[in-house]
Length: 427
Image: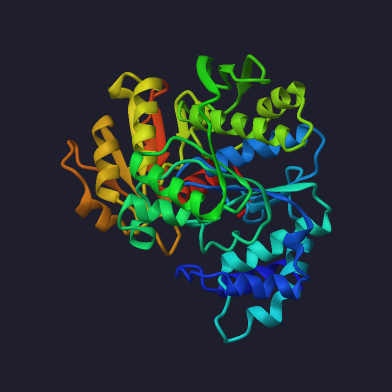
C-alpha cells in the first residue's frame, strides 16, 4: 500500500462521530499482537495543556538518552506529526504499512473502527517496532473510553478539568472529571494539576476506589522572571530540580504545564528513571510545540494560538493584554469548531481587538461564518468575513502596520491552515 492510499483509507473511517468503548481498539491491537504491551507509557489527560506537557516530557526524556515515542493529536504541521519516535515523525512508508496490516478490520462492516482508533493502533505498533523505552501518550477525548486507555502507564497525569466537550463528557464539571480520571490505574501514580473543588472531589473518590495514588504537583513552584520573542526564563523551586530553566514556549499559561512536567520528573526519578539536571535543561531548551502562542513574524507580529475552548480563550486573553498592551495595534483572525462554547469564547476575546476577521477552516466540524456572525457580540466596527483561512489571513494582513499584532486563534484547524501559509509544511 502506498501512502496516498493509506490516507484515503484513513479518510474513509468515521472521524466526526464519537464511539465510546475499548472493544474496537482491543480488536485492532490483538490483530497486531498487542504492541501496547511492549513499552511503559506516560498517559496524559486534561482539558488543556496535554500536548504541551507531552512535548516537554518527550523532549526531556529524549535528552536523557531514552528512546521515546510520542503520540498526540490533532496534527498541526503534517498529518504524520501525531506519531513520532525521538522527535522524528512516522515515515510515509511506515504509516502505509501500519494501515495495510489493519485493512481487513478497517474495512469490516461490523462496528467499524474510527480514524483515531486506527491511528492509535498504528502508533503503538510503530513504537513497539522501534523498541521505544517508553511512550508519552496524549488522550484524544475524555480518558475513560478513549482509545489510548489501553496503555500500561508508568505514570498518569491529569492537567486540569475545564469546560470543553460538555455535550459528550458533561453536562457538569464533575461528569467531565469522572471521564478524565478514568485513565487512573490501580497502583499507578496519578499526578494532577490545579483542579476546581468539584473536580477534585471526583478524582479523589475514583482514585480511592481503584487503589490509585493521587499526587499533587504543588511540591514544585515556577515563576517567570524574563521573556523575549524567543524564550521564557523560569525560576524553579522543587527537590532535586534545576534552579532556573529556559523554554521557547512563550505563553504565560505554560507555567502550569511546566510545573506539572517538572513534578512528573520527580515521580519518574522515584520510579527508577535516570534524569540528570543537564537533560532537564537541554530538553526544555529545545522543546517544540507549534501553535501555542507561537510567534511566526515580528514586524508586524503574527501569533498563532490554538485556544479552542473557553479556558483556552480566557488564557489567551491574558496573554494578549500582557504582550500587546496597546489595544489599537491588535487584530484578530477567528474561527471555531461547531461543538465549542463559541459565544463565551467571543466574549472573552473580541472586546480586546478593534479589528476582527471571521473565518472557517476546511474541517467538516468548522462552524460556518454565518453562524459565527449570529453568535458574535456587538463590536464596532463589525467583524469582516472570509470564506477560508487563506482568504481571512490575506484580509487581516492587508490592514497591518509594522507595529501591529495579528492573533490567529479559535481552533487548531484554523491555526494549522494559517501556519501552512505562513510557515509552510505538509498536511
